[in-house]
Amino acid sequence: KQEVTQIPAALSVPEGENLVLNCSFTDSAIYNLQWFRQDPGKGLTSLLLIQSSQREQTSGRLNASLDKSSGRSTLYIAASQPGDSATYLCAVPQGAQKLVFGQGTRLTINP
Amino acid sequence: DTEVTQTPKHLVMGMTNKKSLKCEQHMGHRAMYWYKQKAKKPPELMFVYSYEKLSINESVPSRFSPECPNSSLLNLHLHALQPEDSALYLCASSQNLLVDIQYFGAGTRLSVL
Image (tube, rainbow over all chains, first blue to last red; front, side, top):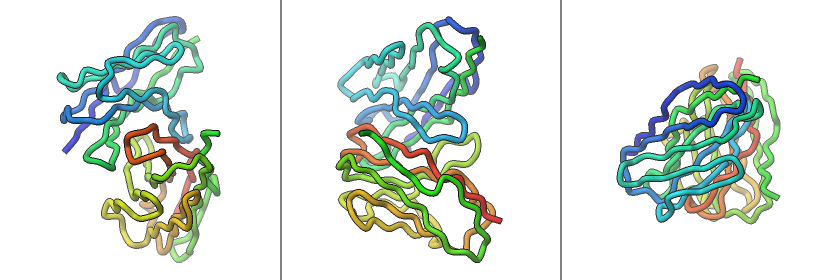
């Protein structure tokens, strides 16, 4: 059974800092890994999807890495802004049809 | 257009009511999903439809009844719900099962009195 852990559970940093969010998973036989963002009371927005054959994906100020062998992924946010405040979730497939989510990291960027 | 539309945004219902949640996408996606999310918890998968057929039912109580009338539309019929069913219900779609990005709707906030 796939288990996903995200550290830290919450993070508060001043605006402008670079930061790293961590995600670990127990079963390394994954098709891909996704990072999502969720604003309070809203749906999820997909940020990045890394295929199992890739090591990195970049979108703007976001960079996600994947190390399948160690069961880890990181989401790097450069030059953080107050608008980045949200909960960030990583998710990996379990079997062929089901996504398993981590508990999320609640990020607060202070102006 | 990468939009998944869910209606209604908010729903309050009594335990004897029957109501339905609706989800629509026009991206040509063949996989659609229902998730339930409680406060400060990650989404939990309820149902998966692939090519309009039910592919996964995560042991969801029968008071939740999904329906996929066509490739663009997914419904969740609710009947005799309990207060503990109050949650944010999220719909998502993807081009194919799990290989592709899942796009989520904004959700329906359900309160059961």
